[in-house]
Image 1 (cartoon, one colour):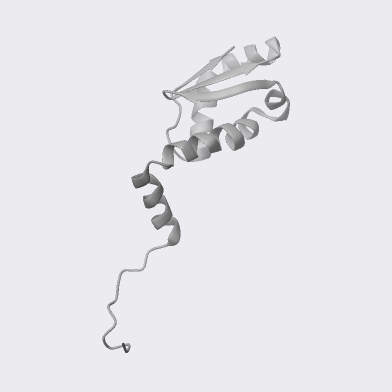
Image 2: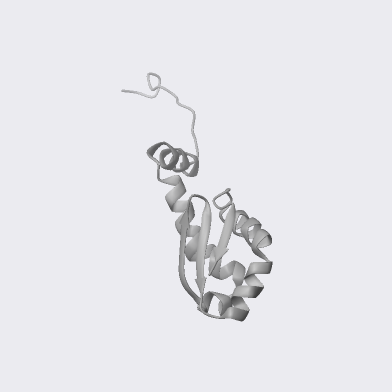
Length: 102
């Protein structure tokens, strides 16, 4: 095969191809949830609040967080709407709609 008979295809960035693959295979949402829990949460709430986090999980677009410190829990409770917005912005997608703190 020489260069005259080669078929030209539209070149796409690997990041676009990877995102398309993740979306079509159903891996995009779990990956975003993992990033939100393990990367976004500590970054958005800060080191101390993250250290008080005992358990964190996502179910039906609700982030469930168990906090060991009542003071930190109350502070985060008052910021729930802003926290959800900032966490979603961190991962670049709408992953959570609500935050439930206990």
